[in-house]
Length: 215
Image (tube, rainbow, N blue to C red):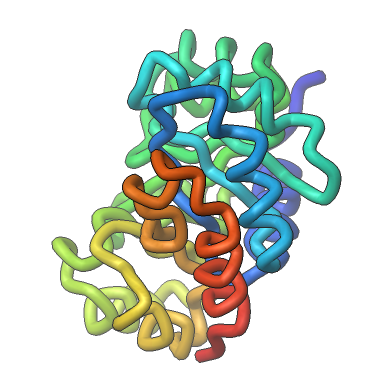
C-alpha cells in the first residue's frame, strides 16, 4: 500500500519515540537474529535497524519480524531493489544514509516508511519540502556533531532528527539534550563480540542502560 511522505514521516516519528536509542545492527549469522532481538527488546529497545551490509541481513529481518514487541527495520537502503527486498522480508520501516528521488519514490510506492539521511541544511530542506519532517543526521560526528545539529535546528526547528554515526554510550546523552533530537542510533548496545558469543543477558543490560538515557 502506497504511503505519502508526510504519513511515512509520522510513522517514523512514532517509531523514533519508542526509546532514546535505535540499535544499528550488523548481523553476520541469521541464527543470532531472533535471540538478539529478544535481548534488546527485553532491555527496553523495541525499534531495531538491521543494516543491509551482510548476506545474512534479509534472513535476519525475517527472523526478527515476528518477535513480540519489536519493530524491525532495514538500514543502509540505497536502491529501489533494497527497498523491495526489505519490505518483502518483513521490515516495517527503512533507514538510509542519504536520499535520492528514486529511493524516496520506491519507499513511498512500497509503503515502507523511511527515515532518510541528511548531513547539510540543503539536504534537510529538500527532504522537508517533500514532506519528511523526521530525518536521520548522518554521519553525525563527522558532520560536526552536536554543534552542527544544534545550528541546523535554529532555522529548521520543525525537523526532528535521529543522529547516527560515531555515537556511543559516552556521547549519546549530549545529542539527546538537543531539542531537535528525538532519539539516536548506535551499535554499541550490541557489540559484535557479544553477539558472536551469544551473550544475550549482557546485551540486555546494555540495552537497559541505553533505554534509560535522557537528554
